[in-house]
Amino acid sequence: MIDDAEFIRGKVPMTKQEIRALTVAKARLGVDSVVADVGAGTGSISIEAALCAVRGKIFAIERNADAIELIRRNVEKFSVGNVTILHKEAPDGLEALPMLDAAIVGGSGGRLHDILDALTSRLKVGSRLVVNALTVQTTAQALDYFRARGWTYDAVCVQITRLESVGLYDMARALNPVTIITAGKNF
Image 1 (cartoon, rainbow, N blue to C red):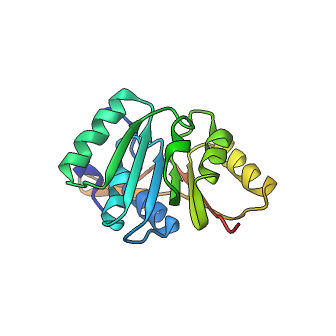
Image 2: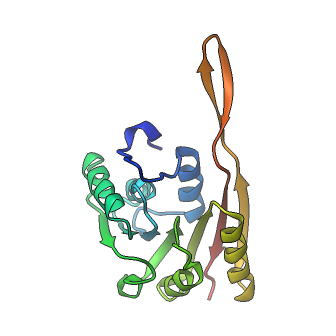
């Protein structure tokens, strides 16, 4: 996993290293995986996915123009040629994606159900859908979505606390908790 400080960030939120590691692990990417990263932000997950799926294809979907520029710069910095950047507000454009081995949703702009519907039609049987939820409302929406459709899912709430040096001492600094919801498409 790439250190957070290595990414070009600007003012766009970025998924932290520990959450990226768990997200990519939950997505179960292979070297040939085709992946959608919805709400790609800085592109940190897209780049980590691209480094795992070296013969695959990653689609970084993002609506924010500043974030699109950061994704471009990070893709160039890390020399990942298997990332396609789509400046779209999901679910727009998702119907044009190829069939996916995994989809990761990091941002939904309040359109989570529509995005999950669009992704479901693009997911291969046996694929994984991972939702990183920062809010209780997004967590509830994702769980409701999967329950209503009979999907098998797993959810973990992750709280990362890093130690920072403060003079002669080390102080714990908590990052925002993230709930990682993973569902498998078995139909």
